[in-house]
Length: 49
Image (tube, rainbow, N blue to C red; front, side):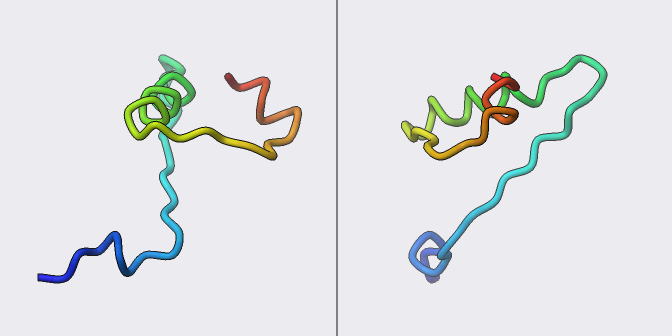
């Protein structure tokens, strides 16, 4: 079986923002789990976190 992480150039993850407003906290949790840091986000995007 081929390792998909070696084939993918980009990966996009979309969080459904339900009535509880869980999308931003879930995105931050995934960021922390993966040990990644976002750069170059616009000011409006940063206000989500």
